[in-house]
Image 1: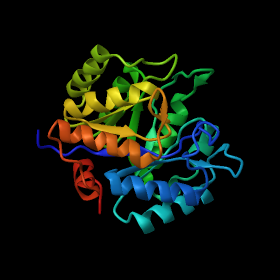
Image 2: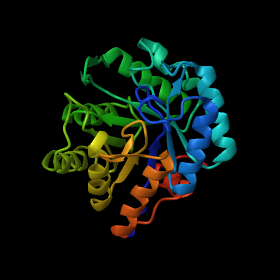
Image 3: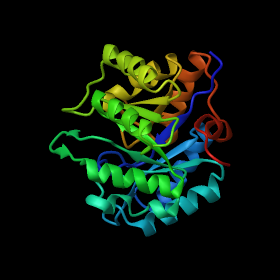
Length: 275
């Protein structure tokens, strides 16, 4: 294969704490430094959450603005992707940072179970978030935690609520949601190609499933996500020393399957993003 593979780094998320792994970046300064190292290792998309000073999740637009400013200063061509996930806020608070006009933002188009609660994405909120992304020229990354989310994203693209072509990320390995299962993974690809032939896709695995999803995605010609948000370990006994270490592991898999690691410029072209 010669098609470049986009590596997304999910730098911090809303759950992992320094008590879990000291490498988890919490402050904006730490996140910028960690993102820069991951950028140098081959990541072309930074998936961004922000935290309060005590490490708890936040949707504060001021913190998002500072983080985006730092990434664009130190990683000038990297794609900045904000999270609108439900752990960081409620209702329209989840999209309060979208007027900052990041390159991309995550969008989950349906609800599903998380380890201890329901991850709620009611239709009216999904439509509101999608509308704001259209308004501000932000490309959504559809986070598909379930097969139904692929169907819903395709329907939203057909009726104009989402701009085509789609970019869909298969999220596998969340407890009580879709497990890391190769047959399901293959069916996801098949279904997306049938419903949205022009779509690009990415695979993200949680915990021990991260490296498996990385390899399956790269081998199948898709893109992939890694980072300390999803997984804090290199193996069962070894904590990851940094986001860059996880990106480097994904880049090694790209070499194994003769996939060049996409530069940020190539990633922008693949995703149809303006320079």
